Length: 377
Image (tube, rainbow, N blue to C red; front, side):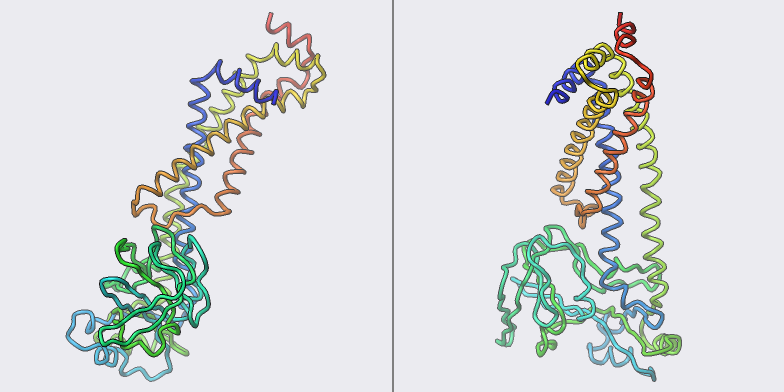
């Protein structure tokens, strides 16, 4: 309590300098955490599809189905003809009416989905589903145009701003895993995301996306050659992985120089304010020493003040994140603070507190109470 009172006295004496340092530290924490969120967001999107994108896989865009020149069955048959080896297709189906939209992905994709949830869980592969924020938890009944109906068990709710799977990327080059998602979520439509097993027997009620991933049992080269003879665009999985890794590296490289620059400014600033306040409080430190405080205790009182600065900065940075989330901008669609953000913030605060104590610790190493008072006379 005494340390807090002493900090408040120093704060009021140097209020402008303290506010400036608090804002600088807050800017550093925001920049660090935003970078972590962006990197985590890409990793989150990659989680569901990376296991499918091996050496024997490729992403295929069904051009015949996309431009409506063939029916789906005809187009899919034409896209896959001439392939001699065994393969498996991972695709996305959707159904939509005025009240609800259902997106069904392959079981292998659904079990690895890592989109953040605001409540509940993904449930099991056979019957689980998650919905957007306005979707009702529990059993949801869907009635199709022909009068038939099915029930879907919504086990969890996605966060307010989220991504939804949708393999609609047209270009056959520059494709990344993030292209397998859409950020255009209709707030007025309850959207349910589920597995293929959960809609078993009702697949004919759904529409297929024009893009799909194909995995060959062995040797993708021959299969890709066969695909390219047909009316499709093909991107080998290795290219998608390389593009995704490059995008991840680009995100990291874009933020690091900014964080380093802000970090240098903040460290210099916090050392300066630490030295200034320590020097101004030399008489107080002499009194504390006479009253029984050790050198370590005096540095501790000083460091607690700096720690309070970093705590105030962390609160401001959290407020900034809340404002960013409530803005609805697509730039922060998947932004979610995680344990990594918490650890990074703690490490940043401890590091800055340590830096702030270095110079005072060195200055007071051979100082006696008499010397403290002599300097202030």
